[in-house]
Amino acid sequence: NEVRAYPTMKLFVDGTVFDYDVQGRQWQHIVKWVNKHLERDHVLKSVEDAETYLHDNDLAVVGLFPEGFNSGAFGKASTHYDDILFAEARGEGIAKEIGDHLSRHARLLCETITVGTSNSNTKEVELPRADLRCEDAPRNPQRPEWTDKFEVAVQGQSMTVKRTDKSTGWAQLVQIKCCDDEKKVEKEHPTFPIPSVVMFFPYDERYAVFDGDLQSFHVLDKWINGRKTPSIMRMDQEAMEKIFQPQADSVPALVLVTENSDTEEEKVFREAAKKLRGRVHACISGTSSLVEQRLIQAAGDMVPPTLTLIEVPSYEVTEGHYHIPKKYRLPLEGVTAEKMVNFVSDYENKRLKPWMKSEPEPFPEDLKIGAVVSLVGTTFTAAIESEEEDVLVDFFAPWCGHCRKFEPQYKQLAKRLRHVKSLKIAKIDATRNEVEGIQITGFPTVILFPAGKSPKRRVYYHGSREPDDMISWLHDECSTKFDDRPPPVPEGQSAESGLLDPDEEDL
Image (cartoon, one colour):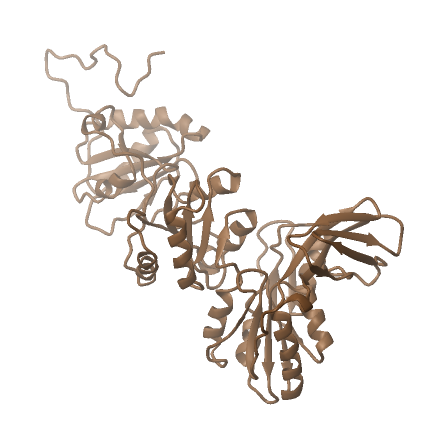
């Protein structure tokens, strides 16, 4: 229950602690969040209870159990999610009655229509389709002291919401539930057996019946987790939060970045996503919005079309630490749905090598310019794995003011020790290159990799950035002892050529 930032809001319910992680900070958002957690495992005692329950919640899991049935796995699952509400009917008779009502509801395609606030007494909103039946009571939670009453009228694809208790507008973020007209729906309603678990959600097939072992928490939990988000999401702020929010059992994100819609790659991706439900969060992203650009940067500045599997750390991994997510790439040339599924299977079985962002490798002649060696993602490991050389690396960011201030000092250090053959002094742009196993949380970060066999020891430098102080530290930490005094200049030669050194600037 540690508090790391302010303000922090926590809710304690039956020994379980929930952190407030909703995007909105308005009181309406907070009320809705609290109500969700206070009614996590609700017992349905009548059809009216079930109707109210479905009216209030977009993501709902309902258990239909006979008397005496062991619903422990269901109860345990209900404490595992803070964005899904759970309810159960106990007893053969009431469970069947509520199950029949739910089956009729399952035929209907329902939508939550956001009306929002209004300064006037009425507000008109466009509906996604015609012939919807909309309820008068708002779907968002209502406080007991509110007097707000509404009347909803639908004509074609237009819905008009009118406040009836007053002639003024309203300040709450009104949401209205609208469903297909049951009299005009021709498809047959399903049958929900007793016992069973049914999940309702506002996307894809709209409901699903659990077909696994009702006594297995892990199987049930995985099934619910695979349906709490759409089978395929379009990248926006809401999708970003759902996908990359660390959870107890996080699943990776499989992201297709494309500039065009209805491509062959997208058709294959959609086919594969159906087979991968519950194993990945499948998402399609463009390149234009700020959220999409942030995703592209986090995934390695990919050029579309690309397919990337991005690892989402769990709570345990991320607590108190910053981690660059691991990424895996699948070439799209000749790709099939089967190849995509096998790609995910290889990841799950730890057969894939992470993809690392890297600048182009420097030409050999460029490596010899100046005393500081430039490394990139693809050359880093080979450079530091030398058994004969101590390797000092400056991890920098081009935009970092401290890095720019440190650069001439680092160049001076490299110039003074260029005669030391057992020491390599290097640098790497940590914003354009990634290296496995090293997380950089601040710039500049200077690490020494002493000579010797792998796995290499890492020694972080935290002292003064003056060359004299760094040389003294290197004497203490390097595996190979060295003389920091340059060798004497042969007689008849000048120590200074008069030409600018590559590490110097012509001012």
